[in-house]
Amino acid sequence: MKKSLRCAAALLCAAVLLSFSAAAYAADEGSSLYDEGLAVVELMTEMIGSEAYVQMHSASDDISDVLDDIAAGDHTSPTAVYVLSGFDQYLAAIAPPGAFDGASDALQKAVLHKAMASLITQVNARSGVTDLAAASICTAEKTFAAADAQDVIYLYAYEDAVPAAVIFCAGEDGTMHATGMFLVNSDLSTDSAESVAEFFEDAALTVTQAAP
Image 1 (tube, rainbow, N blue to C red):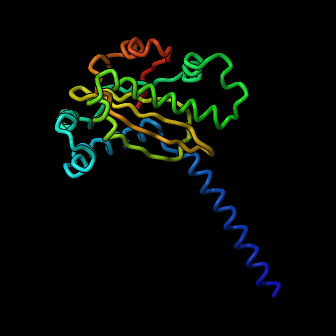
Image 2 (cartoon, rainbow, N blue to C red; image 1 turned 180 degrees about the vertical axis):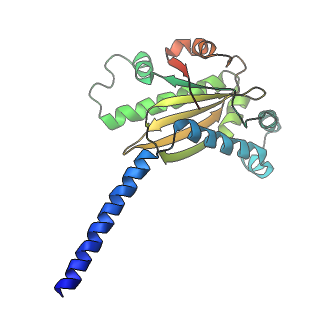
Image 3 (cartoon, rainbow, N blue to C red; image 1 turned 120 degrees about the horizontal axis):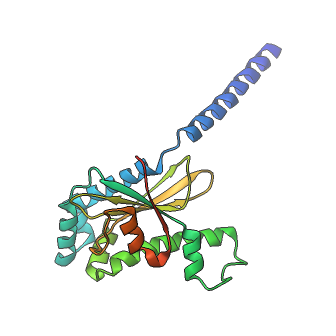
């Protein structure tokens, strides 16, 4: 009986140690935002390349034409990827002073994440209702574990295709929620970090170029 108890205890200890090791490995091997963003863009590309998906979500020929134009581009390999950060300052700039001073951390984070998404939506809205609707149809989302959880937007630029924005919102315990949307506003130049920063000048964001 004692021998059985000792064996059971040993197995339990081994299982606990194994679970700790697995958790540590998962944290060390957390997905990079760069790669996860590419996966989101790939899903978006598959959406607009699927005739069945487009027909299910749009009965408008005008919207379908916009989606066809987006699908005609090559989103395989970005020519550059830019990181938009500094959204705490952006939120402070668009909200009344002290508006969320007494709010919970959860509410402040929710407001911040909505402001990030709204910024990208506004970019497409400037091109008109049709373009905004088309971009919204092929929005893709993904939740994953990441070693570098943070609130940022990755802007993927391409040579012969419209750019794609992936909004990364930090969750709890190292999780990230990513939302991707194509940017159909032709006024946006992605030639350099400076040109991107100039486009988002009113938002006063920091724009840097990401390394693969």
